[in-house]
Image 1 (cartoon, one colour):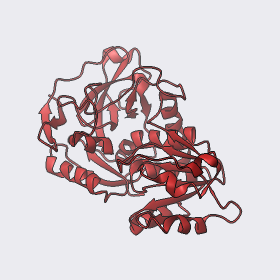
Image 2: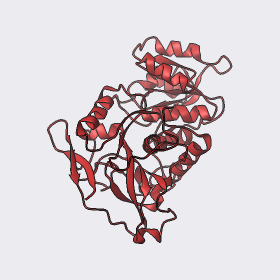
Image 3: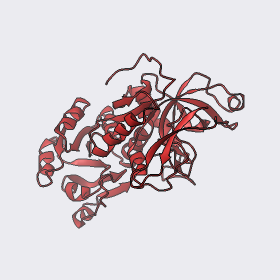
Length: 361
C-alpha cells in the first residue's frame, strides 16, 4: 500500500505520523500521480502548533509537490497529460480566474479537513485542471519548491502591486522565506530595482547574489528606513511598492519612503502582528492590499513565466527519505528558527531518480 505522513495529536506541537493509506482511485476528471518531491511552507508549521484552521489528523500534510503521471484508464479520457510526464500541483482548489478572489469555496491542500489532498504521500489523484507540466529546466526539488511560493509571490507582486514594471523600486521584507525569494526573482526578471530586509547579513548577501540592489537589517528599527532611503536611485528616490509577509508596523516604517499612491501588499503575518495604518499614510494615498495564493489562471501564468525566464527557486535543504521522520522534523525546526534561505524539500523514497538539472543555484 502507498504511504502518507499525517499529523498525530500531541499537546502544543503535533507529531508526524507515517502510515499506510488506500491507493487513490481517480475520477474521470482527475490524473493519477506518483509523488517525487514535496516541500514545506510556514502553514505546515502552524498546523503542527494548532495555529491554523480546520487541522486534520487523517489527511496527508504539505501543499507543494512534484509528481509523475501514472497510467490509469479512468483518468486518461479526460486528461491531456501522458504517463511519465513530470508535473507540479496547484496547491489551491476552487479558484478559476477571477482576479478579485475565489469564485466559490476555496481550499489549500495539505493537512486540513477541507480537502483530503496533501503532497507528503506516495500517490494521489488530482483534478487535471489543477496540474501543470513542470518547467523542464528545474530539478525535482526545485519543481516542488515552486507552486505555493511561486503562486503567492506572483499574485502579490504581479497581480496586486501594479508595479511589475521596468525600473520600479520594490521592497521585499523578510528575505529568506520561499515567497520573498520568489518575489525577488520575479521582480528582478522584470527589470525592477529590488531591496530587501532581513535580520541576517548573510541572507542579505545571498539576496544580492540573486539580484537585489541592497538590503537592510530590520532589527534596527530607528535606522533601517534612513539606510534604505540612501540606497534608492537618485532619479527615483522612493519606493513604488512593498511586498510584505511579516505584518507588524510595516506601514509605520515605510510610509515616508513610499511614493504618493504607493502600495503595500501583505500576503502573510509571520510576526503575528497586525499592521496599522498611520494617518500620514492615509494622507499620501498609500494603499494596503491583502493577497492570498492565486487562481488557476495565475498559476498557469506564473509557471509559463518561470519556464520562459528560466527562473530557479532556491532550495535550502532536502531530506531524501520520507520514512525518516526525525530528519523531516529537522526541516520543521529550520522553519521554526527561520535559519533557512529558500525552500525545504522532502524526496519521496522509492522514486528518487537522476535529473539533468540537479544542482544548486
